[in-house]
View 1: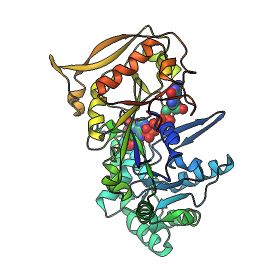
View 2: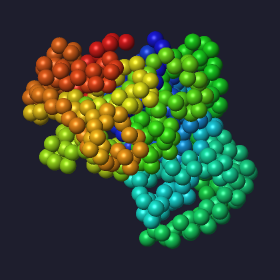
View 3: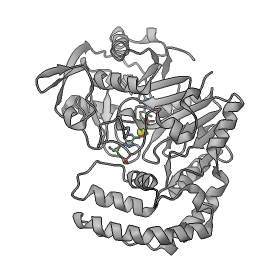
Length: 432
Ligand code: GDP
Ligand code: IMO
Ligand code: MG
């Protein structure tokens, strides 16, 4: 069984968590390489539901080594809260979870900056408010970024915060001029006390995770990479500026974990049987009618992290063909097919009309994409409940046809069809 990446091919929330959980049985490591607690991955085992935000999905299994790679941005209270929630639920969390000393630390001034920016005059993105973008800005800017390893050196951390916090206070006061909010100034000594207390609890988890992964590879261990967000939210290739601030495509693995791309044998692209998007930015197939409402209700399309209603639309094969090519996927998994049961007809977007011209490619420039009108192919729906189907042959003919057509339009084999949130509600087309 090879090393694998599971990546979302839409705008996030494709049900990556469920596929990572299914595959984690056959891997030694589960590694997050991008993002932070902006992610919300759901795993359902019978009557138990787990929602993971910052921690890798592998943490639910004590036999798997879970790794928060260097490419993440970590808010320590959130890390500890998630660990505590799992412990309270009876999950073993200890040496099976590792946190990179190179990951960057989110401070309250990052969240304050995001709040001011999202309510200011420069235009909103509709972020999750978790401080992700400002923390990555500090990482790339180098002067103000603080890494997890620095939390473990008390004098050093205090000194760094004495340098950074006064600058942040001046910066927040300046950007607040565009916002209705008044920023609260931060005290470097109080922040140092607070973060040094977190550091004591975090210390046992912190290590050089790149070295751990290199040792694992040398011993022939299998690594499963769990992407956060979706490929259309990738900072380079997504619908910029309505994206997240990290590389959610598998291209982020090398920089975000230290594992070279050539160690990866297999890339699985996860798609919903329709489209959802949270936050702002173009979504050509978005539905503003009763069908959209129905899908939102049946699919329980409300954000795992923020509870915001997700925008809902028809499946966009143009977008997914683009992301499948970008991600280099070997196969796709089609999720939440059961949500479409009962709709008389289904639409698949096969092209766009852009300023009167028909185009068959995805303009990832958000300003061009906003002007695209979807061109649809109509397929018949099915009325049967499909949540108990376990093989392709169990599916109604129309559902089977819908799945086959998505595979054809995307140009990739379909490895899994998911017909319900539970781990068991899965049709394994290719059993491995
Ligand atoms: P992720 O961020 O990609 O891991 O996805 P989320 O967990 O944010 O959202 C996916 C939602 O769909 C979760 O509530 C899952 O429990 C649920 N889900 C996963 N697969 C299916 C499915 O096949 N059918 C239905 N109805 N729900 C599913
Ligand atoms: P998972 O891993 C869906 C969206 C936000 C916003 C944009 C930028 O669960 O699929 P950010 O807080 O990252 O700066 O917000 O990205 N977003 C997600 N949408 N699923 C996610 O993660 C997301 N993570 C960020 O809604 O539009
Ligand atoms: Mg999610």
